[in-house]
Image (cartoon, rainbow, N blue to C red; front, side, top):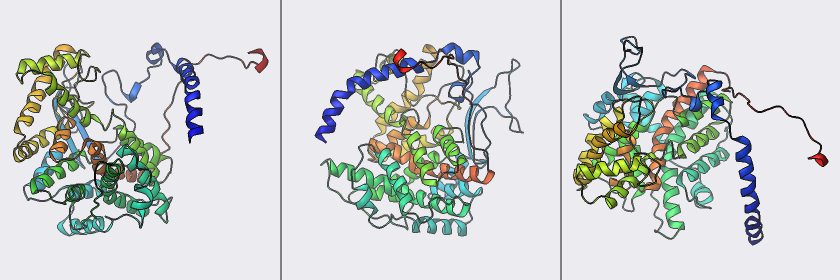
Length: 464
């Protein structure tokens, strides 16, 4: 190892110079994007995504709709902004959450059934589905010792992806992509993601000498939300409110259309015919990216920075801090107010509308109502500052990530677990989209890239 470290120390300056050469050789003139009408990020100039496929799983709407589902337009042809809508298999997310919460039931498993099979389950179907998930709430023999406890990763998403890839080796039919086998794999992963995430975190904390290692076995009679809280805590205890709020968060994160980066990755890899474990590891790699799954951590750290900088919590002080954020003068100096805005929604994010009441209830239980009040004021004031400072083509509102970090903090879930908690929910959507891609037997996804390099000739080595 010492020999390699010495080699690496001597080599890095050379690699740095080579990286500069690589950057110089691959930098494309911006004018080419306009010349060839390239939709960078698969979006047009107004931020609308390029239509790349069809889905029957969920619908995201940020503009006023006609009864036939088309969008309403102003006389000059522009779409009309509206409060956002998120529908799972055609059912409004608000109706879904109201439905199971008024009956004092957990909803994540019901939503998983809806997304996977296209309709709400009957009592009998839901009971049978919960029994299947409960039976899958286990890991292969010695998996914790041989995989999770060996060389724990500093990043929980990396550890989760590695565990998923290792599960391939424990599967007797890993490459069988017939529908029954893929569904079996997906259901196992839905049940196992909470265990893999929590155990990876606990082992990492133990390996760095921060805590003792206390591992609770999952309980097949508990919901996904209850199991996460039980396994995370040394004493395994949690309140009813805590479990209900986490369950709602899982429901809101379970699916969000086929166009988000990780779900699109799921479609791309599935179209190649590869195995389920490779597909889900790729989706995890996408979600790990801070532009996709890490926004809630950024919100939390931004808010901590705000509290350390403002003299009081007056509207004037908050506005000034938000203006400083946009002027690259505060926090990470990226010119962003994290948790504000969305690629699709205009006036409001429906998930934020749903979660706000649950956050307020949890804040009251945790004696953190002042913290919730600060978030609420930032949510109100930020759009005003953004509208004043930025030229924007649509409204700006708080997205679900604005509050999710606060929820996890109040649940004593550490920041390292924020994105794995997101993944624990989104594995359901990924599974539904993988099945959809397989059933519809689409072509391998292969978008076109226009080459803009100049033609040249080969030069013999001695003549260069």
